Image 1 (cartoon, rainbow, N blue to C red):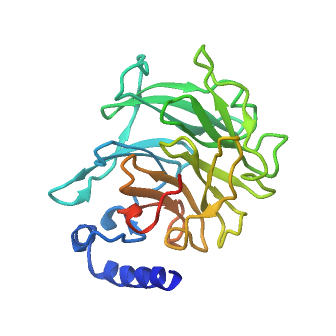
Image 2: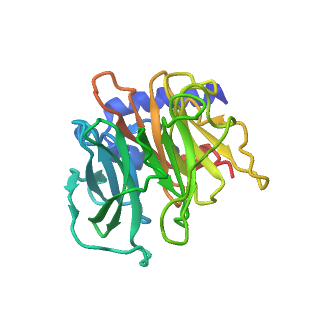
Length: 294
């Protein structure tokens, strides 16, 4: 299996030098590792994917290149087979609630005056952002909160923080939504997930039991690698498993994001020495070669 994966990586690398993203989408239905989003515009696609539409043609991501979080949107064009130049989305005033199915609650970390990362939520709907709001003190405790995701039902928040009382630097925690809409006191996910090293970038699949996250431990081959773990009916997390060498490298891989139809995988990597921030990669037809653990 390892030889097969290495061969796929080698062939894909050779083809990538000769073809554009358009050609890759047309060559075959097999997975094509390490496809940068639109080769001619990689300088634009940096940071963390926050949301991909159900139709897989709208991408929302956050960039933090200049220490201030900025939100961008790009649209995939089926005719040109390219993602559009990202447009910055400015959060508007006015209140939009979560009652509509097309309103998504997204999360972003912003540095405060003390240079600490605090977690904010906002609503995204139809290409516009509303209701930027700092998450309550059960989450923002005065320490850094790096990244977060919410389950598909909106009731459980997973986030990474270097708050006191953890196992190492950054640990992953979870919090449940209370009846008043606020988040409850957070719970550490425990020693099966968290280590003396850093854990970051949680992402929960739609099954609500399969967690993807990044870690510098658990046998990582580089800096941060992407792993997954499954929550049992007894509430125990399984031993984390690596996403494999088609995703992980000797550099940092974070911010795993799998679309709801499980056809597209997005993640961010520093596997590009010319870049100063994590570059977003797209992995087409991820599930055809690599099974999703549920």
